[in-house]
Image (cartoon, rainbow over all chains, first blue to last red; front, side, top):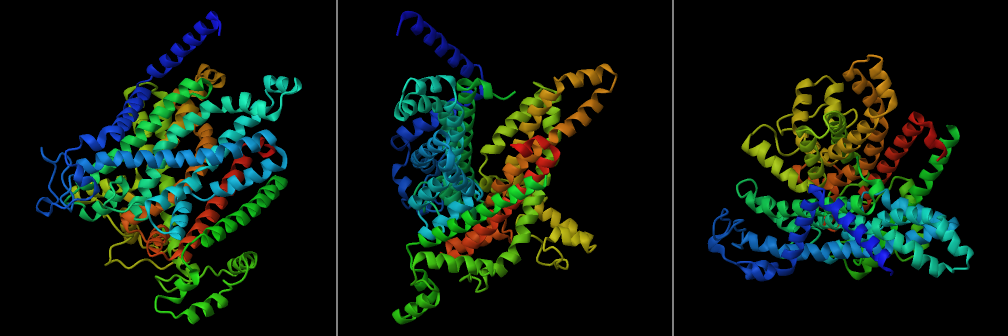
Length: 292
Length: 335
């Protein structure tokens, strides 16, 4: 890259960072996401009662309210809720990454095939996508888990299988417009093959909408898995998963409300964080679609 | 318009076919043997084989699919192990309660979302605008089941204002069934005390379901309103001396209609899906609770039944919204 190009790229980078930093909500989202990732990374080694994460038994101190020793109180086994909620971030992180990852791996190739190839291929792929979108994701996931049997792996698998259609829609629309961009047509006239065009022009330009959607979906996927856990079809106690914790805690409402309150608060903050972060990313990477 | 409707109906047919195929495939990925499940735990091997033959489960998959479709066309969705009744009858019993909740929550979201979005745009960057934007962002991120538990705690237990579970108190006898929706039936048959009670029971679950939709409708209405307020015809109307609130009320209402309608279409499916969670928390006797209790008991015929009926309802709702859209905005018909 020449000096001028480098300087322009640097300016552009500065501008992009400035757009993001100018938005208080995007920064708040970034802070929440960073906190979430940090807890997922070091959480298990900083919690006060590591043994409680996998379900130890201290029946003498069951269902205690929040105190200095137990910030979020204790559950029906006497386990420290703070420990379990913090360790739960790691569970949520891999759930979110797996679901968004699988959905991207299924959805992006299909979306590119539909948008770039067009014709009959597009018809079949898009109709299939529409059918999947016509059943609310949670209901379809519930049906798949009911067929496979409950469990966290089945829950994650079920959610992944219902999550991809959104990516097909997104990428298809993008690939469709890119296909007739002058520079793509120019490349084609100059004899570039499909492979070249896809790898050099289509894929790189799908990248920013993809990143935006994936970051918002991280939160929603975690929420989806927590919902299955809450119903009793996802993670099973004593696994430290937020939804499953609330599922048990529900029977201890209203007297022991803190038991449901804190895991729920963490779900809320995580989803909120990824939402705001994704919103900020969109304003930064794709200013034209920014909201008024 | 007729061609548009015909094309839209054709598409609906394709989608319905796809939906049936999905539920068939999902029913067949089950690792457990459906014949053994239907025969019960004490069945001998011979009994299981008899049932397998009787249900056609020993035939090739394409033939099983044909039989599945013909069963569906005859309204046969199988039998629920838990209730012992035909799934179709169970669905007919539980579906109205769910629709009642969904429709009420949609009404809440429009009644709250449209005016709040409008005012946020008019008082742009005011404290009200910022507060509403915070609420709108939080509304989408709230886990419905958790919000339900917290609202139960605050309004049901701490304040004691609202009941926290069921559709009516046990002492109240439900109104004579007309539509199956308690609130509507109570109104239609003139049982106003029952109507008031049913509304009190429905407020919390409907509100929890409405929260994300309120947030979404506030968002689109605010954006739409800001655009309208900056347009030439608003300036012209003002220059002609039309009072500001009349301009806002009339133009906003007219312009809010399309995006709100589109948003309702988008949110409808989500709301229908979330009844699974909200009905569980509020013990609301609808298809969501029915699906959950069946799924936990590995009784999957009812779950497939619920999946089908939810899918069909969502498709029909989208059809109605598309047609209304085409009627309100003729440009969309050619798209």
